[in-house]
Length: 131
Image (cartoon, rainbow, N blue to C red):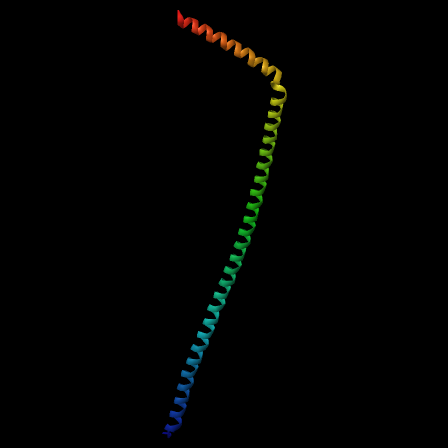
């Protein structure tokens, strides 16, 4: 039988064992590092998508607010124009009424006739009450 060199065999076994354990540790460390990098990449991707979406929403809200303000301004100007037109018609109608509908002389004559008729009516009522 051949003589076995136990010291050399022990050293080779220990070296293989240490190499395997060291490789396992280095492999686990690299796997963990790559896993963290992948998580950060995914997180950064989601964060960039969220930022882009927020910016899009802000832009959309700002444009909608401006559109709404413009529509309100248009509506206000249309109502203002309508009310000014109605006011102008009312003023023109009032002017026509004051100027042409009942002239002062005609109104004075009507008033005198009305007073005479009222006096006659009062006299008639008084004579009915006396009887």
